[in-house]
Length: 475
Length: 96
Image (cartoon, rainbow over all chains, first blue to last red; front, side, top):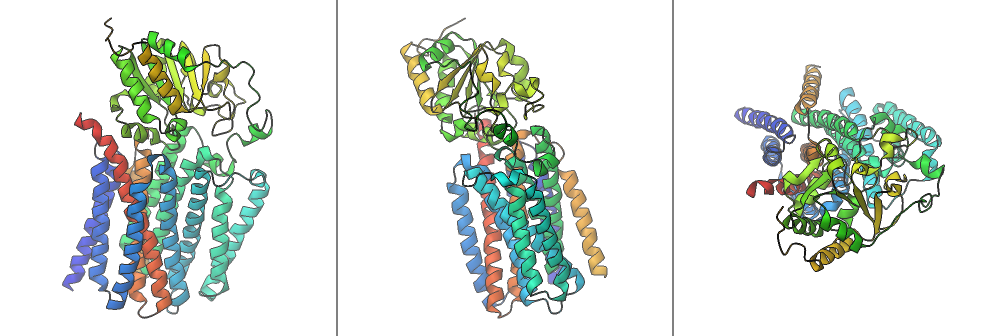
């Protein structure tokens, strides 16, 4: 009896700490501590459960095996993956969480369903359904972000709705028939059709919207965990899963707002820009531009040397080229020359909201120089030089002025207000969303073609050969 | 039936709590918050452990339980560590 009080107490503390953890994660100052708090809470929850169930020697053996394999793989993945691949890794982790809930439900259905009541059977069905969608959806999201999967043409037609609705109906049939024969055919129908449904709903969504999808799938994995809680009868699991599910939904909504996309159009509207790419303009995106000015790093360096105020707009291209450190060096050189330097961070710069902040922080860029969109936009008219590094859609002026653009309405960085704009880009290829950019044709814009890192290093050596940075220029 | 209604109450209150916990999130924290919440969703480890315990000497069920424990722990351990790695970078500004 006394152990029951003990484990109940541990559970309550764990729930409290988990709640505080989620809350703390939404503020910059408390975020790191909150994450550690949530980790401690998780440890407590496991400890409490182990005290409560007292596993036998055989169970301990399997627990040790699972813990060693999963824990080790988690540590290695988390420590070795580059920061640029963050969204993919979160998707992978999330998918595995969904798979775990799926496996628990399948295990119970197959081997432990004799005495199961209706509640348990319904919970199993929900857990399998949501777990499978989370698993395959997350894996597809990861593969698309990695570039392993493209968006097949059929997924952009209404055919996909037919396919997905059929799969959903098949899953529903499986779920309804499940209580009659928990370990038989209905279970597999449910598993397979839910898994395919996860693929079917994620595959049509374009890469630019993937962060929203991952966030939504993260919410699903909370729901799957709560359903698994009903299956095994754990209130702690139910409350924690419900919290993550609800908080994930709010976060998804917040992210949609930041990207000016509605959740419904993300889920059912098809890939952003897919229609533009297939409609007008060349599919390759190389054509369609007529008034492009390109320039060499020398010319760009000369403009920088004379500037008083420079703003860098970093995008995912910068991260891919691993050029954050070169950028930081260039900024330092300009600062020593008396130039006012700042960085304009679009809410969705990189491939996930906040991704770019992480990458620049890694390169020791001072936090105060990272300016958010609302702060920096009024500053562009008094900016001499803007250098866009591997960003594209987030600086597209069409989003403000062209109602026919698929980007119309998305908040963008108004770099076209600046006196001079240099766009560092590998080629004129279309952006992540596949939409051409009117900025490139503006009279004050010049393209500097090349890899971001190579161009930045070129700029550095040009500026150094001009003697910039050696003598501090007083004004 | 009382166990069920109790569980449903827990579900309801947990959901309401989750809705209230996050109000305004600065864009900077979207990625870490998603990653941290994702780690918490790996709490399915509890279900995996319970399953292993219930399995007795059913080898197939033990295997399924251990597999699901492995995947869930991968999510938990990896999720918390990578979130910490991200957030550690924000912390550096305070050192200067």
